[in-house]
Structures are given as C-alpha cells and as structure tokens.
Length: 549
Image (cartoon, rainbow, N blue to C red):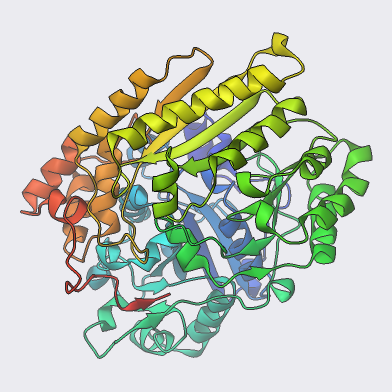
C-alpha cells in the first residue's frame, strides 16, 4: 500500500502515474510465500521502459516461478528525484512500494551507453553502494544485461554479474543458483560457471572468454501475452509480437545484427495465437510485428492473413516496423492498409550506391523508389528515411547523395500519388556513425565533432524542398556514446565522476551536458578522443575481445 509520505510527494511531480503502480495485469504476490525478490530496473523513464519488450519478457518469466517475485523500477525524472531526496524516500518497486535495497537481486537492463549515469543514480537513490567492492555481504546482488553487456568493462566496477546475450533461460538458472548457495562469494563463483554469465571480480582468475547465451527454440520460449497495461501514455502504446531474432543481412555497422544471430523464428500459427491473445488481454487497437527486419520473415504473408482475419473486423491495426525497401511489395501493402494507414520508415543508411554496397546495406535506389511508388499509389503520404553520417570512406558526394535521394522520393510522390491535395511529408534523419564492438567496423575511428557538423550543414544546405524535413542527432552525444561503447574498465571512473557532477538522463538532449562529460574525462586524466576518434590497429587487444558472439 502506498505510504502517505509518497502520496504527498506524488501530488507535487509531473506525471505521477509513472511512480504510482497499480496497473492492470501487474503481478502481486504474498511476501510470506516468496523466497527470492528481484527488482527489475530500467535506467530511463517509465514511458520508455514500459515500451521495452525485454522488460516484459523477463518480468513474466521470473514471476512464472512460484517463489520469486519480480517488480519493476524505473529511473525517476528530475522532479521526482528531487522530492525523493528531500523526503528521504528510497527507490522502490512499483508493485510493493518496498525499498529495493531490501530485495535479493537488483537487475538492470542496459541498452544504451548514455544511461550509465542513470544506473549509478538509481543505486544511490536506493542506498546501495555504487561499487561492488564496497557492498556488504548481506546487501542485494547487482546484476545487468542488455546490449551494453557485449562490452561490459566500463561498468564492471559497479556490477556484480553480467548476463551476456538473451536472458530468459539464464535468469531462471541464476535464481536457482541463488537459492542453492549460502553466500555472495559462493553464488558468484557458481554463477560464473553458467553459460552466458560474466563476473567482473573473477576476471583476473583465469577467465579466457564468455560466450553469449541464446534461446535456441523460440516456439517453446516464454512470451508475454498478458503484459501490464500502463496507467499513462508510453512511447509505444500497443501490443507487440516478436517474429524472429537475428538478421540475415550482415550490415557492417550493425551491432544488433551480429550479436543477435543466429536467426531463429517463431511459427506463424503460434504467432497468430499469441497476437490474438495479446490484443484480447490488453484492449489495444494496434499490433506491431517486431524484429530487426520484419519483412525478412519468410511466413509474413501467411501471418498477416491469419491475424487480419481476426483483427480487421475488430478494427485492430497491424504495423510493420523495420521494413526493407528491397522486399516491399504491393501484396504486403494491401494487407497492412486494411484497417488504417500509418507512416512508412526505411533505412537506406547511405545516400550513394557505392557507400551502401561498402557497408553491406545492399539496397538499390530502384528498390527504394519502387517501394515509395507503391506506397504513394496506395494512398500513403508520409515516409521517413534514416541515414548515418561519418561512415568509413564517406565523401562529400556521398553526403549530398542523401539529399538527391530524398528529392527523388519527392518527385516519385508527385508522379504517382492519387491525391496531391493531402501533401506529402518526407523526413530525413541522420545519426552519427559509431564504431560498435563486435562489428566489422569496430576498429574504425569516429569522425570528429566539427567534421560531423560540417557534413550536417552540407546536407542541410543541399535539401531545397519544403516538403522535406531534416533532423540530425547531436554530435556531442554521439561522441560520448562512441567513447563509452569502446571503453575499458578505466571509464568507470569517468562515469562516476560525471554522475557526481550532476549528469542524469544523458540520452535526453535537454539534459545531456557535453561540458560535464569532458570535465569528467579531464578530472580522471582520461582522453575521450582516445576511445572515440582513434582507429584501432589490427594487433591491438580490444576490451571486449573475451566476449564471444
């Protein structure tokens, strides 16, 4: 039950539903019948965390164990953090309102390097010492998983144990190991023997490699069809289906593609049942079909037909993110437009064919233009195009080719739309190329901030049509992300230093402070450029080499 003190605080903050719990389908257990309590922590806001499929899967998988209770914890916004510190309210689980320092396991999913400071802030709000070495034997274990575990070293001093790879099976094994051991030391030693587990404190005791964990059979894996219904709007307010994991494409810049393989799919019959159940249990009017490249699912037409037979009479829309322009078809278009049209998104990544071929993003310009033609003829009038700036070997001609491609898409609309009165919205977005671990580009250098800004201006000045909107990602955020992505254990000092300077919510541009980060690097006598903008030699040992994908 929510305390009077917390209730009073919630009346003072924006969006109190972020912190009040009580949602439909949340899981409440009797504490007298629970042996292990897990706080599943997402180091960003409720709206983003509640949209995360991984959180939904692990929350359900853990709570399927009778004597385990997993609760959700999200990073408080700055107004709530202020009230919590002013009123001595520790970070708590949304289901019980109990302080997470009283839980057995505090588990973070870390998908983005710029959330590192939020991890430290959440530990501090909970009253848990930041560094593993400073924690008492009877305090909670702090574990982490997610995409950032493929280079865990920058956070290695703060995390007792990392799960590398997919977590559904290994978290159950970790809970079993926890029940069977009588001390933190014994648990960590036993857990380090599990496939997909990395214990940083044991790194110097003979660890040669850690192999990622995968779920081999997705049809038999747990999938949530009765997810919690949020009490306030979230980023992706819809039900979701995960079609498959992995990717057949092999784009050289894409860490998710390399770390997510091998490709494993769910059967269309199972997906149809799961999709109908998810909508029935939620009341949503949209079902998103998710994967790294949804249109590469070989049973997509069969699946869409099976779902639409149920969805269409109930006015439930199917949305297909992650479409590929080179296998986009009128047949697929006709299926997904039966209820209502939503915007289309394609990611050519580079403007010129030369550069697309070099990065292994083998989409032809004709494929993209044909996909847009099909969409415009079918009544669509909104297309988003995603690119990267700063890719290896990129030239100014490659940059201006992005503008040329956008103008060609606009001309395609003029030539093939059946309703010019509605107008057209073409959005071009660019992010800064970041050489990620475990990709063929992991040893490449990121271009300097000034050079990225020059290329942004070159592209901006090359876009001449009012119907084309250009958005670009902050080069300063991209620079710090690159440094953290390729960092070693020394960067833990930088993360702690910048957190002490007040860094919070760094993934939000209005909260990110480049000046604080550079000051923290300077304070720790560490050079951000050494990690972000330096090309690594083929003989240089990389901090993440011991992780095998």
